Length: 210
Image 1 (tube, rainbow, N blue to C red):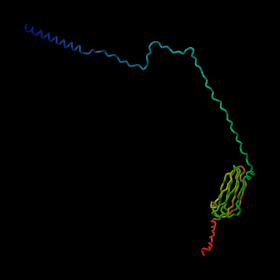
Image 2 (image 1 turned 135 degrees about the horizontal axis):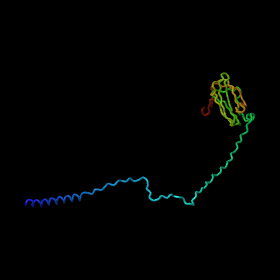
Image 3 (image 1 turned 45 degrees about the vertical axis):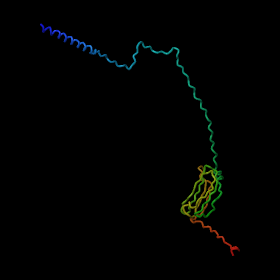
Image 4 (image 1 turned 90 degrees about the vertical axis):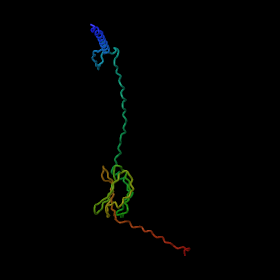
């Protein structure tokens, strides 16, 4: 009986201690919440309430404003081209004047020149000179435009070989062909011109030198 009396207070003390610990554990445990579903934002706006369709005012009427027309182009008068009157064959030859003509069978040495001097008035023609070697047929020449006055020298050593040449000078026209021919003969010698001797001045002694 005494033993039962001694155990009862201890049992009560242990029971109270256990209840105190259990109370503190319950108070310190966080309350569990029920997980809520996560909402994903919508890409489209959500409208609330009735949707009213927009209408234009009853007095609004589209108006058309025409653009002004571009100014009318004014035609510019183009000057009329009046071609120059075509010269006749006789008029062309009248305007072809020789200031120097090669003398017949004139001898030109290889280091000399053949002079030319003439005037040609017509512009739509050409003046042609050809020198042909009589034995070999070799030739040399030149061609000049019209509407000019010419004064020049043709080097003899431009010719292919020395010898007798037949020369021909004429006007060439697209409309009339060859006009106003002049021709002749000259001789080209492949020899230098003779040196010109200079006389030695003579000295006359003066009376002072004697």
